[in-house]
Length: 413
Image (cartoon, rainbow, N blue to C red):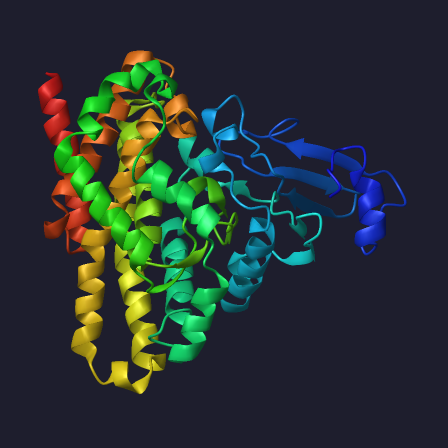
């Protein structure tokens, strides 16, 4: 296997992908070293520009590209190198379903665990923008439509049963799933790797009732095969502006529960809300406006998903399912408690992860205020997890955020 770096990528492209012009000045930069944040980055990712075009080269190696973290040496966190080829195939499939929402893929090299794709850097990660107080028009609705479209058209509600089972067999993805199964649901980061600021959270998130419910959700994640899910869709993996989204990083994909994708994205919206309660804003009016925007996005994510999925069901579900609209309604209603429960998993884990806190918390300069934002996030996670049976509507999920904020602030006084 050829280990690629900034010095040998140009000869590699000349041999393997001559369609990219390398005759003139070409600049190669390593994402995570030369540009961007490397936290959580498990692959080696390079941006290649020739002055007229740009592409992303991604390589999986036997080690994971994580900075100073136990996961880089722990064998349980070393997924198979063929994850890149699975991601390449996943991108191709999702681009066929939602072509405007997924980067184009150009080339895959299975021998060297490399693939090439469109550089979507002409738009920015939504997490970065939201952390700066930028309200992205239509973000939640477009994400909801992306998820609903991909879930429905890769589900057994639409596909012939054998085609659905074949898709499931093609994307078992055992090695990548194990990371989420153990890191996210079991939170097995060693105690000494937990950030000092939140180390006192550990008894709270390892309370017996939380652990039991986390195991139940892990079991559902491992055994429910409703549709082909992204499994890592959060605001850093959604590049967005006021007219479009581009969703990246699909190496965790497999046939799993629809509610997981919605829950993971919901958690990254709730983190923005918790941050906005405590981080500086130019005025209180701007704080209120941003919080209102995020709260509306939380509602819209669930509401637009339900409506979009139901519309697909009505028009294109197999006859046996179209004949039973009550099943459709029950499926979509029962989905939302799962969404809330799955959201709680990253809400707990990311508070104590050795990867460090996500950007929306790191922009809070005052450590005490940052701690309050993280504590609010963690308590909302518990509210979602333990009260999820009652969270059966978009209104109920949004109300749970507001009620949790009020309760937390009242205890601060």
